[in-house]
Image 1: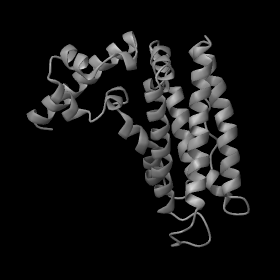
Image 2: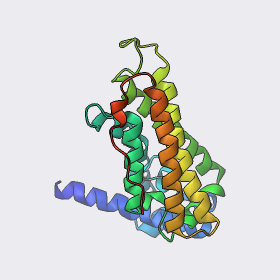
Image 3: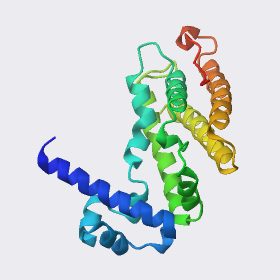
Image 4: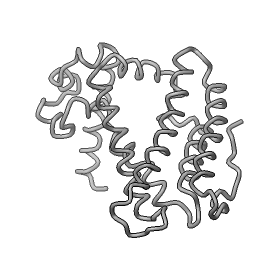
Length: 223
């Protein structure tokens, strides 16, 4: 990465960090883009050059989130069930206390900011829809039904909804437990256990009567 790109990334990070601090302190709807610009030491136009909308300032990593499940499906080892690929990635993130799961001390404030803003809740729903659409595209690249090449086959879209919905529900249950005051470790372990059960039910249904070797290994639940 060249010096110009490094500086651009540094500017983008500085703007996003300044925005998040203001949003968490004052609420998303109470902070203007001009205030973010002043706090970051840049012009309002510069902010919009990096973040087309105010919501993009809050969800500054949404592109990564939207494509994450699809990338797991595309990059999975040959013969691996797509459900298992998503399941194992979630369990790995739980074992590592990945920051994006919300196991860090500042997570409740982040979630409360979303809860208190209709605009952020709407954007969160849009991100979820894009996750499913990207995942459906990835699944369609490796047909799941007996009619490969059928561009009108709705199965990838329906399976994507089931996988993404289960993944989203696991994260929301983790959020609910943390927000209610449960310590991160037991919350993580409970969610990991039930996520294994839920994803394995999906995987079993997807391969019912077919090749069950795609569920070849038992996932390691965080201890």
